[in-house]
Image (tube, rainbow, N blue to C red; front, top):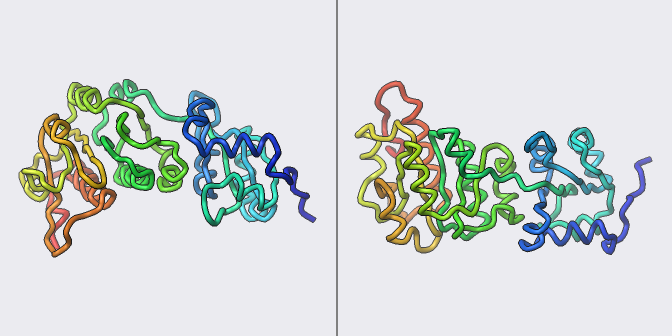
Amino acid sequence: MPAAPELISPRSPRVAAARRLARRNFRGKERLFLAEGPQAVREAAAHRVDDAATLVELFATVEAAERYADIVGDARAAGARVHLADEEVIADISTTVTPQGLVGICRFLDTPFEEILAARPKLVAVLAHVRDPGNAGTVLRCADAAGAEAVVLTDASVDLYNPKAVRASVGSLFHLPVAVGVPVEAAVQGLKDAGVRILAADGAGEDDLDDELDKGTMGGPTAWVFGNEAWGLPEETRALADAVVRVPIHGKAESLNLATAAAVCLYASARAQRASGGCRSVTDS
């Protein structure tokens, strides 16, 4: 028979402490955040910062603990405290409508911007004015998939540890260095000083992504700067870039959403950087 749930009341002090992490001020104070679902918890259990395990605590329903026994085992091996809890407790901690039965508590894992620069990255995504946490997490996932070596969230962007951003990253948050709270001017200047070309992605950009690819100018270290979902990049941010680039619209669509445009731009750079010779346009039909 499975073990009875250990935490039967949402009023438990441990449950209350976990629930508070849904709020930004408590996350910042405790330097802890929530990771929900099997994929995020699995990645958190495998991740370490300065020899310290990122996952410090795990809440699981009995059913989820049985279904994801390997993940629970990894959490215990990482030194995390594991609590069996009933569904009411998990629902109380979770920020999703349909919880998957696993909620982890993790240490902050952002990387100082200076360390990112010291690593001489070749491909970076800079989220300059991104306010929607779902978009931020999705762009982080795109950057991870494209092989980017870092992501930078400026001080004008959403909190990296917002539960929706963590979920939208689908574990990519644990895969690559992310710097947070960097002023956009400092981010751009630091990357330029590190030999990185700055490309601002904007639907009204003077330069066309296809033309940039055809000219062979995208093979070097590159940072893409992405702006706000509704109004793009302000003029002062555009002025900081080496070029302002638009993704061409070959059909009748009015525009691309932020995450889609980011995926196209990042993969274009990834392909150009990996090509031994010139590369064909990634937007050709």
